[in-house]
Length: 190
Image (cartoon, rainbow, N blue to C red):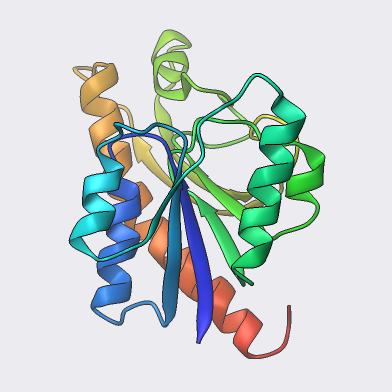
C-alpha cells in the first residue's frame, strides 16, 4: 500500500479531508504521519481522531538543521508522497529535491503566491480565484501546477468568506489529485 505523510501548521481542515478519504477508502494509501511545526495547532487533535501518528517539528534557530532533520524523518518513513496541507514553512532545496511533495494553495497560480493569496486576490480586484495543487520546489508557490479549480469572486465576499469557499474546493481537489498521483505511481508511470 502506498504511504503518504501530511505537513500542516494550522486548523487542519484540509488534512482532515485527506484523513477522512483514507478512512473511507476513497484514497488507497496509508497516512504514516502528520508533521506539524506548531505544538498547539488544532490539526493535531484532528489527526488524533483518525489515529494518525503526530511528529512535532518546531522551527529552530538553525534553519539548515531544521531542514536536515525534517528530511531525515521523512525519508525514514519511506513515503511515496508528501502532502503539504497548510504547512506555513518554506522547505529548502535539500528537502524539495529529495522527495515528491505537493502543496495546495488558495489561488490560481501563478497569480497571488504567498501567505496572503486570498487577501491579495481581493485587493487586486480579481473576479475569479480558486485553488492550485502544485509540486513543491524551493520557491514560494513556484512549483509546476498539477491541478486547478476556479470559482467566481462574489461582490459581497470578504477575505474570510472567500477563503471558506476556496477551502471547499481545496478539500476535494487535494483528495482527487492525491488519488490520481498514487494511481499513476501504481501503474508504474512515475
